[in-house]
Amino acid sequence: MAFLVCYSWSPPDDHTNHRALYLNQRFYELIYNRCRAESGPYAVLREIALLRYKSPTLVIAGDRLARLAQEIRRLAGWWSPHPQLAEFRRVCAKAMADGCALTISGDMYPELWRAGAEPLSWPTDLNENEAPGSV
Image 1 (cartoon, rainbow, N blue to C red):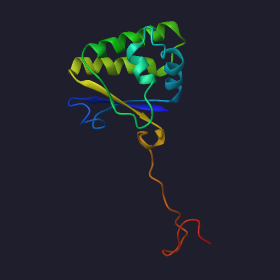
Image 2 (spheres, rainbow, N blue to C red):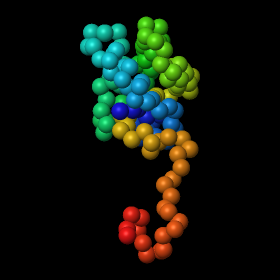
Image 3 (cartoon, rainbow, N blue to C red):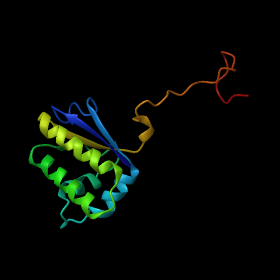
Image 4 (cartoon, rainbow, N blue to C red):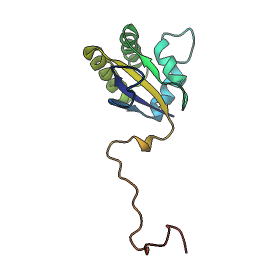
């Protein structure tokens, strides 16, 4: 599981139009293990941790955006720092400064969003009527 985080000015309609950050499997494991308790101090991170692939897009705006930034700061102070915590906090700060929301969705296929991913190429030694893998 991983998460696609985007800036949004008309949530959730413009989700994926303004990509901000891709949170990887290790980040998911961190918040899944540390932030799921109902009575814990991580209300917004808990919502993110409970997202599933194909869940509705989660919208975080206004006061909840400020709370998310505080929760990330708290998590970074209590546990060994995950490299994406600081990045995620910067994304929250930018969203607050720009007056937009964040939209977050679960993603099972991180390779589909990776910036700079190369398209698959077909082998060049096939004649035009052969399909890859045919004999």
